[in-house]
Length: 350
Image 1 (cartoon, rainbow, N blue to C red):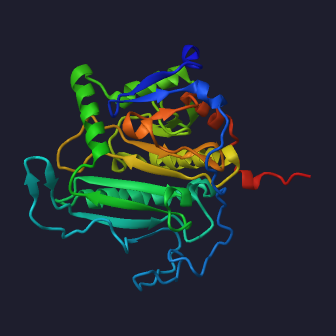
Image 2 (cartoon, rainbow, N blue to C red):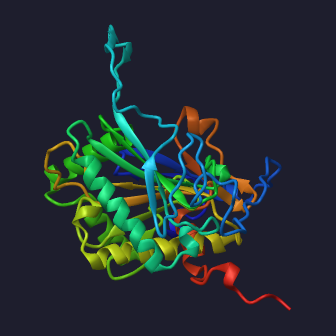
Image 3 (cartoon, rainbow, N blue to C red):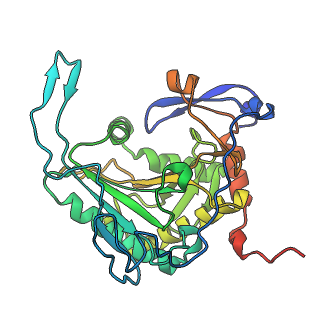
């Protein structure tokens, strides 16, 4: 990619069939914009004021059990209602609305308030993967549910209301926008070429090696060629399957290992509790076979130049198309070169 290292160009995202503008020459511009307060990791294993810690009372009055590993419960303030009803609206195809049934849950990764995926062992992350798998299967089996979105917003910068390690699950009656785009693209690719879009893409990346961040026997984490966010990554299984409930025990452990190694690198990049939004894209649960779908996870972190400078989606990006300054190749290199031992475990400087 040396020919594109210093010239403006655009890159195509085959998953969404959208373009991103890349402007690597802009990395030299001075920064006089807004800076953020550097994120700090939680310092106590138990917080008596935290509504996710064991034994504490939540906002709805319920008391959390003394859970030893993970905890799953219905979201106390859900964005979706299982019994949403009402008449649909359609006025000339311009004013359109319809009820959307769904279920929202919260999953606590650990009873410890001070942990994150980056600070948990593979053995501690494996029960989280197991819960994700069980919830995907159970929610997806419901007749009204067609999409199960598991996602984590880490850090106040990404809107997380509580630092306790947790994620959310939103199960919806319809396919959301990103799912519709990805399904259409993967289906079209299979129809036109007879293969899997992400299998073929991963093969290209493994051959090129320029955007690989870390890998193990079962999973690969890479910065996608079409990345929008500065240090965006994509986590892909080497074997083709559509959802977590198709993973072997070894692959589940491989996913736990990949998540740990990737999030450690994120934290080490700026030696900060690195914020991000992360989510798994799995086969739709609409009762139809989806041989075209390849399981994957997206990580969208907002930090740009340092722990206090973030990227904003404004101007041309809102009105035209997304734009990035640092190339995906340079971002992958920085993440790949980051140590695999967490910065909080490094020896203290003399």
